[in-house]
Length: 267
Picture (tube, rainbow, N blue to C red):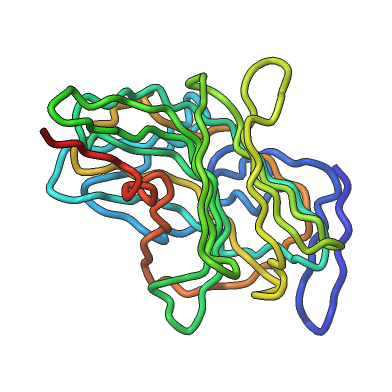
């Protein structure tokens, strides 16, 4: 892997010119410092949902237990991506959980964030793989496996599309010339994009964004080891070591953001 290190106005800029992979929150070789545990922090966590670093399988599992409220568990990078240059992010996901009741929903997620003056409500864009439940009273709730994407950069909007496999890839590509971020999912051996969501004018908000990884579960979900996880995080781009606020925040609702679309019919 080639690296170029450039000093600009006292800030270290590191160019990762080829796609680089490292173990989750580990740095055995010392060369992929951006995956060192001290380069990540919990941005959001709750007792209802937790992430487990499964080093035996080199993955990040999302676990949850039924509770009275929805929970999040999300790690955020302390370094920032420099949007003056293109970048690519991708991560493999597995989400095999099937909901059994109306609030048995969850997802795994990869996204970008930027703290503002209101650190509890950062700007964000994310793509997630999970499930939602549709209830058509009085029938049994129906499980739908979905990919969701949403953004508050620079305006709030969202989209979702069906997924047909428990395994796939969540991807982001940023083009610094067009100033657009494209988020899409990939399924199957042909690596065919299953859906595309574009965030326009990303650099109009900020030149630097951090990365977050994790998951969420609604109050009726029970995610066990192996049900939902992320693995094989890859990135290419220019990153800047930059400390960020340690304030907790709730990641955008993602799959749950479409709860308003759930339809209930009465007799």
